Image 1 (tube, rainbow, N blue to C red):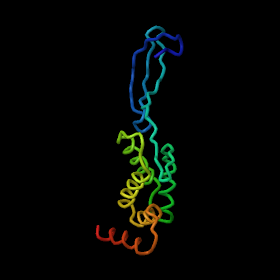
Image 2 (tube, helix red, strand yellow):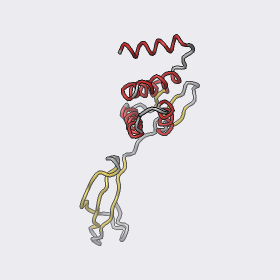
Image 3 (cartoon, rainbow, N blue to C red):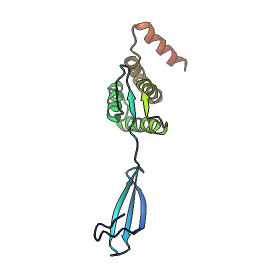
Image 4 (spheres, one colour):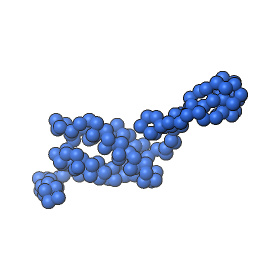
Length: 150
């Protein structure tokens, strides 16, 4: 790490601590030549998650798009925004940890439904009705009956 003051190539780490919810590390460094201190941040480099859609197209994973879908399912329900943000972060982390470069919308939809089922059953049914594209009342009732049995 080059010193921003004298451009010397060597420094020592004086202090290290997690920053931004543990996704980065903040390091205080001291230049071995001029003894001035400066701060650096280490960020985990993550590969983008590619989402394979049902129509065959591909796009990068968008956590905000995931949040929008869950917010629609939870409209007018007593589900805290913080809970939805936590669910979105959990899903993103699961996808990152899966070590797969490409995931399908089906995989993401199933993860969302699992999380929403635990959070709010009405939100789960709303999301499932759009996600599974129920064709008629019978298919909708089948999903409700599964939920009741569990």
